[in-house]
Each structure stands twice: as C-alpha cells, then as structure tokens.
Image (cartoon, rainbow, N blue to C red; front, side, top):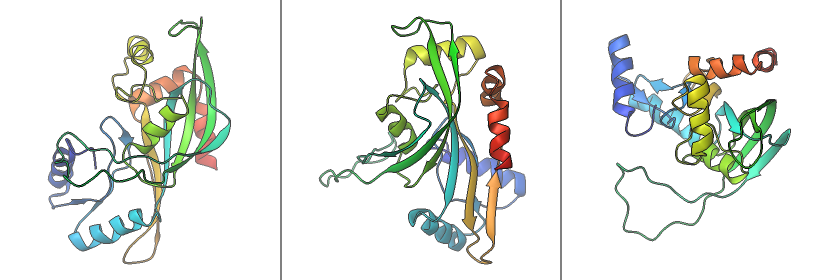
Length: 221
C-alpha cells in the first residue's frame, strides 16, 4: 500500500491485474519501493493488520543516506503523531509522543569529490534498517534524528544532496526500499517470506558505488 494519496491507485492496479478486489494491509510512504501486501478479503486483512499492530511482522529496509553512520545501532526516539494532508485533524488534544525503535546496520560507504556542504567531499552510505515499531515516517524521521537523512527525501532530507543525486544519477525519488517481510499466514500458520530487490533507480546507485557485493551478502545471510 502506498501513502494515502496513492492508495486507490495501487489497489486499482492490482485489482485489474488479478481480476479480483483486494484489501491493502500496510503502508509505504510515497516514493518508497518494495514489498506491498494485500489481502483478498476483509477478514484476512484485519488479521494481518493485527499482526502488524502487535509487531509480529519482521520488516527489512534498505536506504542510501547522507554521511557515514555507525556500523550498527538502535535509534530509540519517541515520535509524535503526524497527519497526511488528506486526513482530517481531530479536535481532541495532541497525543504524547509514541515509542519508536529502529535497528540499523551500515553495509557500505562511499565518498564523492563534490562539495555540497562545508566539506570538500560528500559521504554517503548504504544502510539496512529493521523498524521494531510502525510509526508514520518512522525510518525517515529516525535517520534525520541521527543526522543521516535519506537521499531523495524532500521532507526530512537535505535538498542540496538530493539535487546532486538527481544530477549525477537521475534519481528523482527517495532511496528507501522495503526489501523483505516475514510473517505468519493468518489461516495456515505457515511462515511467509516475501522479498524483492530494490527498484531500478536504487540499483543504479548501488552499482555505481560498487555496493553490489554488500547486497549479495544480505541474500546469502
């Protein structure tokens, strides 16, 4: 499921492909590529949605970020609730920040001979992320919190770095991908392992930076 603005579009595409109505189960922010999960009936959609709410679904993301973060770490930073433009804001008082935890691991790094900030070169990294909770824009906001925003993120990123990647690689969206998801089938109890490679524009950056071995090591893990 894409963000709220494109939800209907994604549902219509899949419905037309399989000739059957589908029910979106989870959300990906606009510009994020990767695994989309749908159910064929409302009952199953509710059961799987419950698994997401209980944090029983294991998700893995890849992102290209500014700078060189630590080799690994945990971002434990509560987040306030955010609303999409299309959502109607409640008149009730603002809720307190919600617990939000994201695990990350640095997979590869590079340094480009371009002065974007105050330094003569610019550093970037490929990061694997595993959100423990599912707050809105959690990964994007957490990476901004540790000063390593995602390339292409127009809301939480850095415009100058985003423009550099557009000029060099033709990237016009966020370099964030949901590459794998593990969950239990709500009816059979079977473990479902869903995986997709990053999108073509994401892989173009990975190949240029020589990060393909880092991705290959993930698939063998």
